[in-house]
Image 1 (cartoon, rainbow, N blue to C red):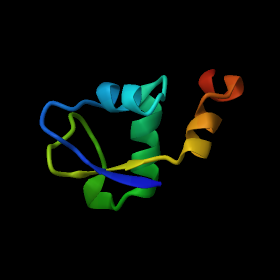
Image 2: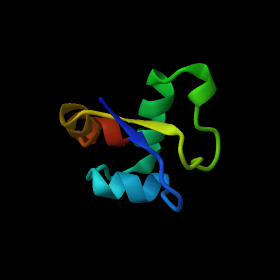
Image 3: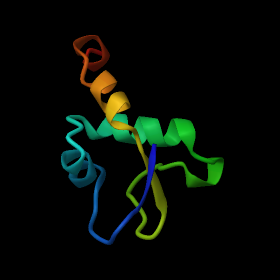
Length: 70
C-alpha cells in the first residue's frame, strides 16, 4: 500500500488511470476499507488529504474477471 497526497484537480478517475486500475470504484473501495474513519471518501476528493493506493499485487487482483463482475 502506498500513501498518495491528493493534488488539486485530481479525481479518482485520473489517479486510477495513472496506476492502471480500470475502475475507479475499486480505488475508492480499497481506500475506504483501509483508512481511518475520518479519511473516508464520500464524494469528491479533497486536495491535501491522503489516498491509500493498493499495491501492484492488489491491483492485479482487482483486474481478475471474477472481481469485475458485480
